[in-house]
Length: 359
Image 1: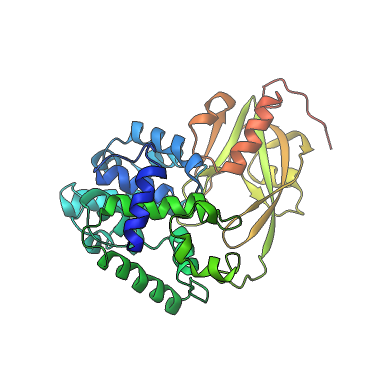
Image 2: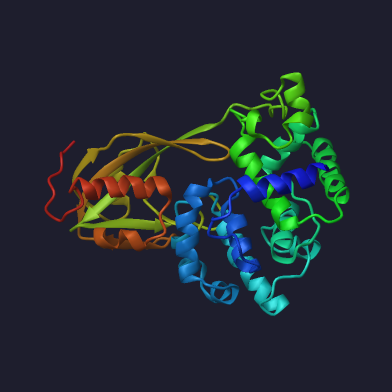
């Protein structure tokens, strides 16, 4: 039996069938799930997906919203360029395509933030188009099964994988593309995993090159990793009568469009930084430092809890606002900033009469 049909049969019996974005032909819902699932685990995505759909039930609702309205429903998922592209894409679909998704993968791939594999997945799930996918999990499945050497992020290796993917679809004329596409995703996510592949339950283990050669952990060839640059910053939790000062990040850029805490150099005087904003410092205390890893660098953060008064801010090119602790849940905050502020709220340190340690 051809490779693709074996994957399809396995998916019908053992694959995932109850995810909230399955059992639909709505390209909007499929597209939203595919974008959210990029570099993010299913369990993390599900509550975001459901909240996002409740607020933006279709592409016209998303297109009509402002970016400021969209970002709180993405905050915490990371890779925020995805959210900005999602919004731009919705607007383009409404403006250029009359609110309807293009009918094939080739044209879907011309939209903002949608690559060839994502376009193929949308076309397969929504329209049954015979377009193979090649995301990170599927690259691992194909590299192992067909014994493809080399870093799969390199162009020549990726082209070989795409050629193999197209060949599998062509070898199965009666292929159910929805089941096959989902089957590849399920296989890569649940059995052919990076660290502990479960070859005993794999539907194509008997023809897998990596298993035959005992090279499951060698393929795909690991990418040569460069040293991750490290940066330091100080974040200022500026409190005035139970309200915290937030500043909006410029877009595009790291955390672009999100609301975060004012910052200064890691070794700078945090009190002086607060005064430079036009605020009078009453007390300050150093909080536990933490780190956050981005795609291209690692950020080390030294947070300061600073009580101020006379919230007469100096004008700034960066939008700023005072937000009460009770209203933080509605703000588009980066995950580490939300964690920090939620911890302070839980500890009772953001109440108007909280006690501060003067340092």
